Image (cartoon, rainbow, N blue to C red; front, side):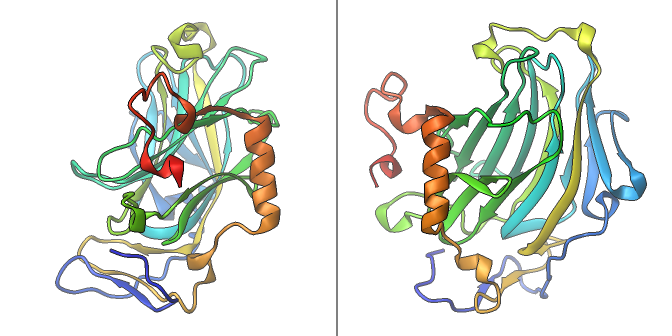
Length: 286
């Protein structure tokens, strides 16, 4: 679906009938998510206000949203695995289904005690990714909760940390670059072991004497979003009422992102000549 030229009401239909589903910030994790795997290693506490995922040598754990989203500003506070987290990955992402899925990724790659986490970001369109950008952080993400945001609208996908943009993936469909516009996505998160690649390219393995590992979640917020609770309904958005649908970075935010990318960017697919000797993806030149 092409990006509308003006702020007209958006109506995206997927089956024969539908209804308006207004996304609202749910009161608890019980209302918003289902724990999907881990055999009891993920659980919800504090009357639904805290969710914890656990990883031990037997299994990790994970959960997914009850709703599917087609555009939204999705906030989640995370406190990552503390101490020696080498080999662990805390994934927090949106994804659709099928062979040509779309996906928007935050992944947090653990490290040995005292060494920084890596934030791994990626965007998949039509089942194709290879758009990785990686960052260090300017704070300890294990000491307290911090807000990680995916702001996805018809114009761009903005990755934010505590409200500071770190990356933008623009809609360049007019230039032949695929962009997620039509496949509703659920929110997924998991804590799992990937010591074949996660920490320093797999050179540092998981020390299971530090298990169990735990990641914590609070303050999920999806009030600025378009969603559905069943694939038998439409997802509808009124672009005249939802200003977040047309948000791009202002000059101050561009300055913030430039600072992050200058000081904390450690990998950019658009500069990896060794990996892409035949040339970079088209969006790298736009």
